[in-house]
Image 1 (cartoon, protein in one colour):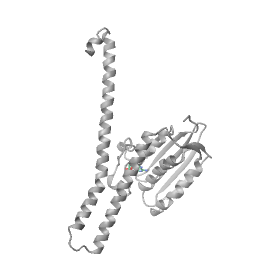
Image 2 (cartoon, protein in one colour; image 1 turned 45 degrees about the vertical axis):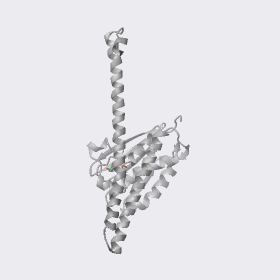
Image 3 (cartoon, rainbow, N blue to C red; image 1 turned 60 degrees about the vertical axis):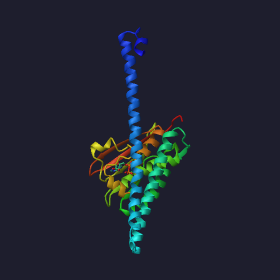
Image 4 (spheres, rainbow, N blue to C red; image 1 turned 90 degrees about the horizontal axis):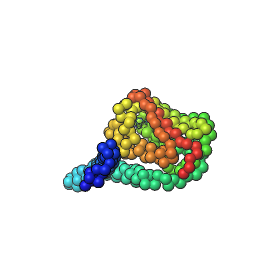
Length: 260
Ligand code: ADP
């Protein structure tokens, strides 16, 4: 019937209608695929700590007299898995909230130099564990309209990664600059770097170059997805430059004035 209804159109128009239809259908299928993929990833990620907890608990329960040291060790492991599960849920909630209310930012005028200084101060103890030097270079004073909590989270994720994926005695340099339109925050490290083929995927939810390393460092694979979503909601852009075994630089660019 659809074909008959458009039979008055000439061939070119008929074709363009069906082209548009096919395009929309293709896009809907892609969206559905990525949704399904996301749900399946979420289920998998949430199940992993639960499976470990199950194994640890079963193993404790199946033994008659569990030596107290073993009991403590297993309970410690269970406690770690619970923390992990909580972290995944917390990150997921942040992401979902960002997706839903990307326009609902709680924007105030923020001194970005102060924000970065406070962020680095908070992360310094983590850097010290690996003897990683953490430096801030502020080239200009910057005042901008930002959601302080969210923007702090976006930058913290980048700095935490720069520490996590670094070597013992490495460095992380955070710099702030601006021109008449934008301000720029660069987070540079001399860590392990990101292989070229992985660079286009690192912002995807749950993508990690090295699962074991991410997990050992307490990662959930959601940090960069959250950061990008926060940057986008501030009408900004994020890019990365990286070379394996040399280091990585993420640059965040935010417009100094935008209409919310
Ligand atoms: P995770 O929780 O695994 O750190 P992210 O979304 O923050 O998840 O990062 C995704 C992946 O990108 C990480 O697992 C890591 O492989 C890679 N990555 C992120 N930042 C860096 C960095 N500064 N240096 C090297 N690799 C990085």
